[in-house]
Image 1 (tube, rainbow, N blue to C red):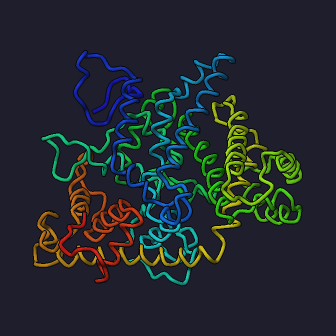
Image 2: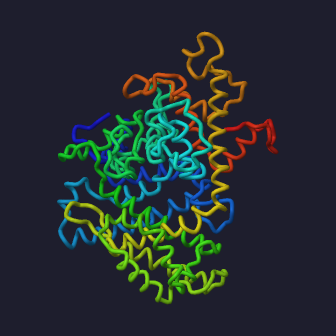
Length: 505
């Protein structure tokens, strides 16, 4: 299971050696990308929202198009850093910090959003609240729509988090191939290399070890559940052999992925909502009052991200320079060729500025210039100011939260009705659930995994059956597209136009 040298291209589960008897790192990392590309989990992202439903209009990015662009930006950052490494002779120092490979960057960028639930971060908060130990705490998401919650019945100590769910998907849920000797319920999933697994870690700590109380944002994020911690620790072994502890360390590739994600999220959302008229870039370019109002809204978050390293006046001056350039839109988007070309040039300029200022510092941290970091954060905040914090989206979000909550309750009740039927059923394997009741096939598979002893530790992460059911149900909900979630909600409530005979997967 583990090589003596703890190589970066090792896989947790042994696989047959290549036909020529030799293993090449570059080939193994390329396989990781292929496995992610062909996974159902990635394909699902075509039906998962970026900010608003991908069904609203063809102009909006979804999580799949976002991931593709993050991968492209990540590879560009890698290329620029390679030039710096060659120019400043930093190769040995980079190797000491775990190395840097473009194939790993591309794979991690493609996979970074696999754990994103239907309807995005608003659903993430809803699931956290459903599983929370203290559902009234701000940390568990009570700050969003506090009046529609009830106390959690299915408290899971490691709750729900999109990044941790991504790690669970690639290590346990993404069905690819199994060994005949595997225990019931075991799944090797994508069996990615150490390098790619560690590159997925934006927040390289399990739930119980998340930072306290340095950064509230970091406290609310974690990279793996307790059930995957053995593989999480293993994925950092190539670094611990160099003298680093298992965490919290973000590899160079993980830092590149994170920065590429920020850049893409900021620019592409602004593009989408300028096209629809929701974000008035043209007004920002001509009205100082409008710009001042938006900057006052965004500044607290910008100051947090930049850690106070630049002043508001400095950012105002930089944005003023950008507003004065011809590429900054001066009129509303009407869809003409000139409009499209100008918007493309504007987006390219913002992305290129962010890339060109990115460097590795002396501690091998991927660092853009603070001013450029502030510019990217400003554009991210435009989406919050003009779209997310507006009442029109708020009503839709409330409905999405209620749908996620109802799906969780209906599915857990459905499983428990069969699971608890009979005196000995609580001890039975999940396949004893009567299939004629029509439970979704994929949910049965996830229940298999939740109820079977962990193939690594030999015991279950969760002692109680209702906790195992809750984890499997959440795994299933997160595997749905938004359209599937809506349709399943209708079916479970008895309102659906689809054929009753159709099997729900």
